[in-house]
Image (cartoon, helix red, strand yellow):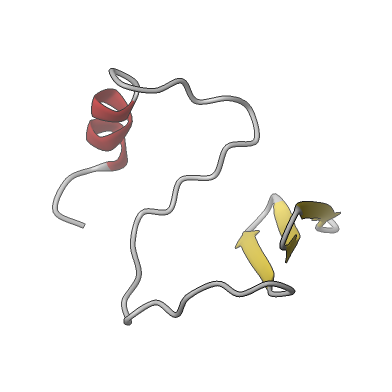
Length: 69
């Protein structure tokens, strides 16, 4: 990353409001693929858990799987 996360958050919040549960994509090491109807997106944070999201054309279904501690 060129700038730290706090720098990005400071600049972003000048123009938009972030709410609890918002996810910020900070980049990828590879060329990203387009998200398609029916895709499942999983975001895992060690020590917190996994957020699993099913993306449908007119609906988003979110599942949260908490890790064992």
